[in-house]
Length: 240
Image (cartoon, rainbow, N blue to C red; front, top):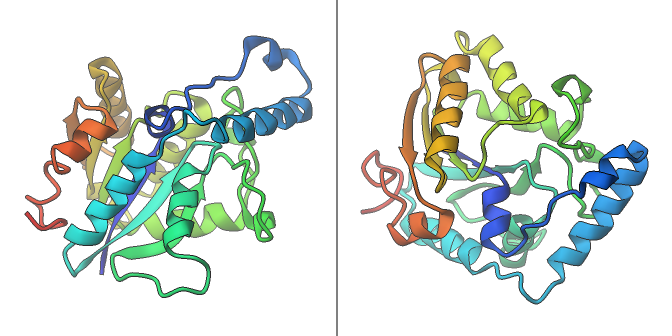
């Protein structure tokens, strides 16, 4: 069974109505204090009536109804919020039968999450945008995620640019093993409304993995869903 690896950045949260950023004055505070304030702010933002996860629901509906039988989907994010996890958990509660199109009902949070769960000790610790890639520490979640996607050959990156050091670390890790596993010759589909960011992201991925094939779509997530996730039907992942 082949797996599509979905990586979501701030573009997903912004599309749902969370456009909050860490205030500059917080960045001078003690790190633990920053994380506490960020957790409180994100939880507050998620409860705001303006937040609308319709695009996530539409996206999951498309995957549920159009994924070819020999494909599954796995989700990753660098966001601190858990909008995507919330919608997936609503559809497939713990203990329920997982649909065949879903590789895992767990959303891998590479930079940590404000979600509080009983299994949170296995989550990746919170990372700040100002942290360095070397600040990453080992976690069960990160290890399981990495050991899964290095064997995949299709990646979709939505609203994520790999601009900060902690995110570029992911590409650096892939670059080190690109000649040993399938990810070195993978296909990447980049979705972002900003052409400049698309070009920068394409270059970062290409530099890390010269053997990768990269496709770009200058659209926001809603537009891409409305266009029926172009390119994915052509390569046999979704039913046309």
